[in-house]
Amino acid sequence: MSSVEGAVRAARRAVVFTGAGISQESGIGTFRGPGGLWERFRPEEVATPEAFAARPELVARWYAERFAAMRAAVPNPGHRAIASWEALFPSLVVVTQNIDRLHQRAGSRDVLELHGTLWVSRCARCRREVATESLPPAEPPPARCDCGGMFRPGVVWFGEALPLDVFARAEAEVAAADLFVAVGTSATVWPAAGLIELAAASGALLVEVNRDETPMSRLAALTRRGAAGEELPRLGEEWGRWRSPS
Ligand code: APR
Image 1 (cartoon, rainbow, N blue to C red):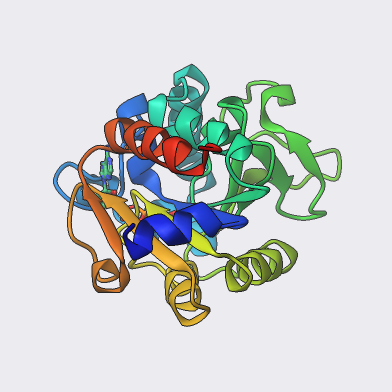
Image 2: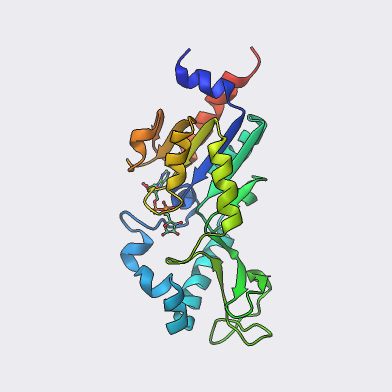
């Protein structure tokens, strides 16, 4: 039995850390690499508090388009495989950088959203949060709060801090994990990418599923180079066999 198999068989606490690559097969574009969002848009023009203060309409329209695509998207076999792993491991937590809620729609019950979500909007003045779907269409956007403030997407923009409680829980789960699976992330955006190093330093078995090599590939004990929607179901089958009582 390989050490990887032994570690998967013995694992009790698993963390799956995901990025944009897992939603790519659901039609949601990634940020970096060929055809990535940041090849076509400048983050400082659409994804910073300064951009929103300077051109709220442009930023609101950009996110409204992205939200429409996310509402129309459906989870793919990769999301569903991860949700099914809740039956394999006593504890399974999904720590995601994604804002599309496709994990929850695939059935994952314990999801930590490091970068917030587009399904929630927040007043930039009084910080009241509402379901984005409950906001009336506004022309020009963004919609206004009762306090007069503008609603902004409930996501973490560049230059903003991650939600402290969510990140603290993510760190605690990662530090206690026996198995850590990084899926579809370029592992280049911090502090989220630091969770991969924390997992390695805490002795978890590190698995990487990605089409391409990343700065964290060197830490992985097991690498699956391919599409998440194909590789994750395969991993699930193999791990299911390993963990099923013989
Ligand atoms: N299956 C597996 N991996 C994939 C797939 C796929 N179908 N498609 C793309 N990938 C990989 C790419 O090779 C790349 O390594 O997914 C990764 C996507 O990287 P990014 O686009 O950089 O996305 P992510 O790592 O999630 O970005 C982190 O940056 O822009 C900010 O806030 C945004 O949360 C985001 C953060």
